[in-house]
Image (cartoon, rainbow, N blue to C red):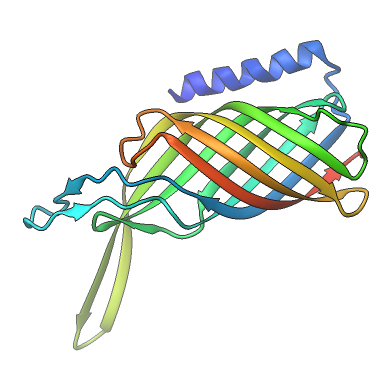
Length: 208
């Protein structure tokens, strides 16, 4: 799966490079915060075999996003980004943290608008759910302590699309509100493979 994803990402890059000038006209980096949601699968899981099952939760919480891109034409480019939950959330007696990553073609339909630039992205990537086992224990000598041990992870293929608006507050610095949709295959841990995400990022464009 990882090899296939990397091959697909490289293919996208070379397709862009062959139809445009390989040298990027501009490049940007950005980071932001927002929320991503998914419904519960409504499964009952007896995680510890105690006869007391847990119901699987909804996906909620605050998410961070980091990314970078290069525009080979004023209207066409390529980029990659990663989105992750800031803190672990509860999942059937365990903790979990989701991460989404994707590689995208980027389209600016109105490249000559200097201060406000509409932006659309579409591409491929993956989603990873990491699970952790939280523990707490107390004794008369050391008091109370807690630990959080990594257990395992589950990886899935995803298709990504987004629409946003780059608002340049200086000639190089921009704010970008954006709506994303992650379509994750076989995302059985939650109720749907469709994961909407809403975020606001701040970024910097080089060479603009």
